[in-house]
Image (tube, rainbow, N blue to C red; front, side, top):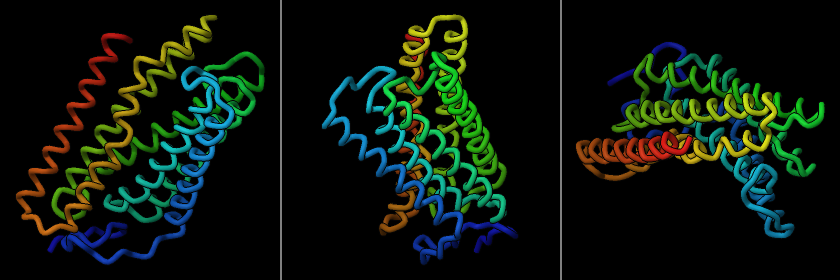
Length: 266
């Protein structure tokens, strides 16, 4: 039987259907925060249905809806998926708490600007708008650092879990890094255009990378969720492995297609 190293937080490794462990305070905080962010996103979908307005563009109820939903799901997913990493409990808890706070900062800033009727990103029109835009950019940088650390931990030591889970976790984080890179590219180009006086061009510059960014972000949830679902079946181990390799291949193909489209239109 494979056993976790000292200080790790991972669930039982050899049992495909282990009993669910008690959540740590950091995990409860992150799950609660994730749920609040998802609810916030859904509330703004209702606001959009009532108030109307454009769906696309830098000022839209779409942004607090999609960002609330995306950040809430990502925070919840990361809290669960990182439990399979072989990392000290205190380090993981600290990283998760900072990640949760940064998610709140990002969604809060985007939501605030939506209610003010101004763009949330790349808006340097007033000192306050500049402060919000810069805080969101800095928060985005913190997210990149935290998620990169988690990805490095996933590849530093083989994650635990039943058949397919180690591959799912590593592949999910690898694809997530593509999403982070595309997000950083959007911010960098947008800020450069804004500072050179091309505000409208800055808003339009992110469009080409948005599909790649969106496709890449949630593999870290989808692939481990598939591995978890298969652990609840009576499938043979070889079948589970084949299904997971097929899922990783499909996810990779989707990222490549989105990346090729971005390269042509960027």
